[in-house]
Image 1 (tube, one colour):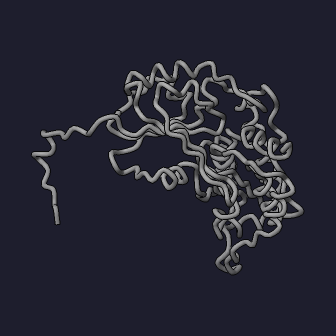
Image 2 (cartoon, helix red, strand yellow; image 1 turned 135 degrees about the vertical axis):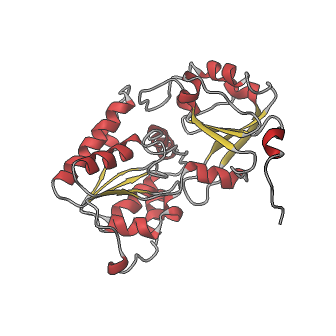
Image 3 (cartoon, helix red, strand yellow; image 1 turned 180 degrees about the vertical axis):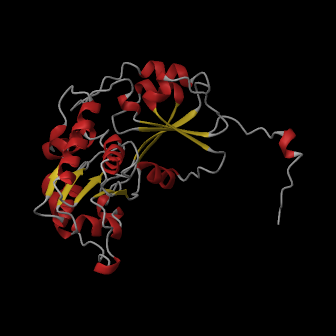
Amino acid sequence: MAAGAAGRRRAADLVHAGAVPVLVAIGREQALSEAASYVAPPAPEEEDNVYDEHLLVVGTGIRTTGQLTVETIACMQSAVRLFYIVADPVAEAVIRRFCPDGAESLYDLYGEGKPRMQTYREMVDRILTSVRAGQRTVVAFYGHPGVFAYASHESVRRARAEGYRARMLPGISAEDCLFADLGIDPSANGCQSYEATDFLFNARTIDNTAQLILWQVGLIGDLTFRRYAYDTSAMPLLLEKLMLFYPPTHPVYLYEAPSVPGCEPVIRPIMLEQILASGITATTTLYLPPARATTPDPTYLSRARLSQG
């Protein structure tokens, strides 16, 4: 039980590292056992292998043992220095197998109450130090490396600005998992997606005929790192703002993607007015379906020729 609790805390610790981590409810011994039994897909042949960039930024997916791509695996195996920031011990053990002598976690850069932006800048500095030293550097971020990941984008930008070749490869994000687990299509009615603090503090206008996804609602208004619990005192303000666009009884969904094989996603349907008492955590994503039907625009509809064939 203690090991499982530690795993869950660490997942929450890493919530702002790359994407939105999910809860891990397994002990370390079980995690290492699963990692040891993990068999990676075969990497491409050398001539079709990885890029020749000095810096490669890759994503591990949300469930690392099932969502690593062959391309990402080949990149990690080719690394001299493999930095990583992931949310569970299974992912960590698998990643270290790909580069036993050069793998290094960036987790040590976090500190209780430390501004997260400071940590991200320190990550970038460590990554660029390796690149400047002439080491083939690969950085593996949880989920998609370009989603909720300042350090990944900034590392690529700075490396290119200094004349180094740098590339980011895609990975499976929490949003991809949400679409699959909730059975929704972003093209149906459209889909709006905001980080919760950004949504609250900026003059956002919501189209409630479309779907809305709010990320990192459990961190709203807190820009620091917290090991155990974030300051959610701004949550009533989020509810107040949402109720400008939705009725109190509007159905919403609290979602957490599964990070290890055998775990199911957390999907909790509630009414909007219940979110303050719903036990939202640092790993929770809030999904709101449309509140009303779309309204056709007769001006453009009458002028367009729609092919029905």
